[in-house]
Length: 248
Ligand SMILES: C[S@@+](CC[C@H](N)C(=O)[O-])C[C@H]1O[C@@H](n2cnc3c(N)ncnc32)[C@H](O)[C@@H]1O
Image (cartoon, rainbow, N blue to C red):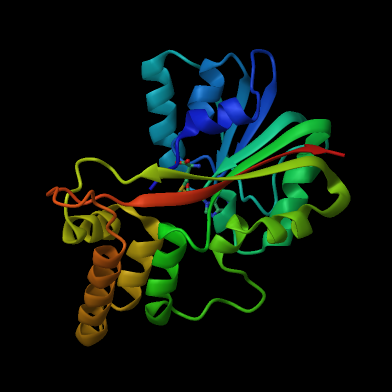
């Protein structure tokens, strides 16, 4: 489930000639539009298979980027190396938030831009995490839940006085138009969305828990379906927090 990549390219003011790092870039949802804007882009992610998909997409679109396997909590880049550091619903999944924020700050040059899109705790994906939580294995000690990154106070606290001119804006995107019922959307998450796949794997050997999760998931998507009254097609609004700042 991806928020729009071009949105962050515009919000971060990415232009030709900038050196840009996309943290937890996946298959290049934001990195490729940034490269298409003329920036020199490094797309980094923990999952090499996604970087391979991105590399093929970029080649087909005729743009060149660097694709680097990297953990957001230990970025293999120099201090102050990038004009702009971005992440679209990516860095929020690294378990140690402070370490991730420290790394994003470290590699950004003073006066450079940091921009993130993070699902909010109150929005559809944040609430999906809350729905799945009773079925998920307990998180390791010292880790924090991803949707906290969609909370303005949390983000301000993580970056502290390392940033200036912070802006925060809540926006929504619509669910994929081809999905028309709660059950279709649930099955879409079960097949395509990493955190949902992980929770279903955790209950794979417990048919009762799996059935209960299926039920809770369907109820959640039925309650949050924001279809226009008297229309047959379900629709969900997914809220995210768009954050931009300058490194102090
Ligand atoms: C929902 S995807 C978003 C990918 C991409 N930014 C996009 O907009 O499509 C989340 C990504 O975070 C990556 N990820 C999770 N934990 C990470 C970590 N500790 N370091 C780097 N990447 C990580 C996953 O491999 C995955 O590609």
